[in-house]
Every structure is written in C-alpha cells, then in structure tokens.
Length: 68
Image (cartoon, rainbow, N blue to C red):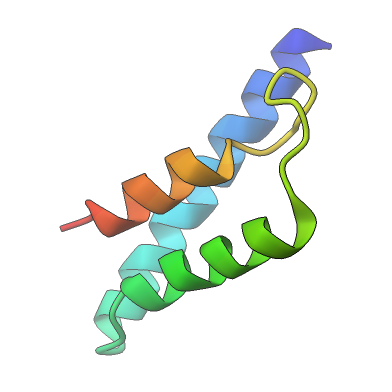
C-alpha cells in the first residue's frame, strides 16, 4: 500500500510539473494554479499525508510557487 501511495504521489508531482509547463507555454502565471490549490485546501482540509495518494497541498503550493 505504501509503495502504491508513493507511486501515486510521484505521478501527481509529474502532473503538476506538466501543468506548470503548459501554463508557462501559454503565458499564464503558475501562481494561478498555486492559488487554486490554496482555495481547495481551505475548503476541503487535508487528509493524513500517510494515507493520501496526493502530495500534501502545502508542498504542492510551494513547489508551484518556486517553479522557474
């Protein structure tokens, strides 16, 4: 189960990287994606990172904001 969750989180990170690249390629700031994750986190909360198939929202937001 833990291996599956790690694989799934890695896939989500790759998807985030792709989204960042597509936003940049189309002249859209990745900050918009980070803002969307912040809004989702406020509305839904965060499950335990050990049980989640997605990286923690805070980690995703920071990674997006630091994308160059």
